[in-house]
Length: 117
Image (cartoon, rainbow, N blue to C red; front, side, top):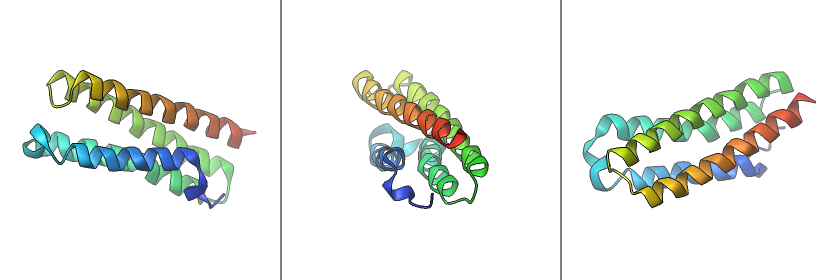
């Protein structure tokens, strides 16, 4: 606990948030402030909750934040799907980001199981 920067799930989710910021800084996202800001907030919330959870004293407290990260990930996945359907991102880009989200989700489930023991 307390070494969140060493967690692969944190690294992957932080990298995803950076990519989301870059993606939403171009194209049609530039002018859709509502969706752009919402998708950025949900992407940043994932590694932030992982970091906060990992830095807490008890596994029970930590798990709560890991579940919050999963909730933010679900928000992000929804926003990415909407972004694809309104043609802000291509199907290929959506598929790539969705795979990364699935990987992060699986890693969070593993972390929650590990901390639940």
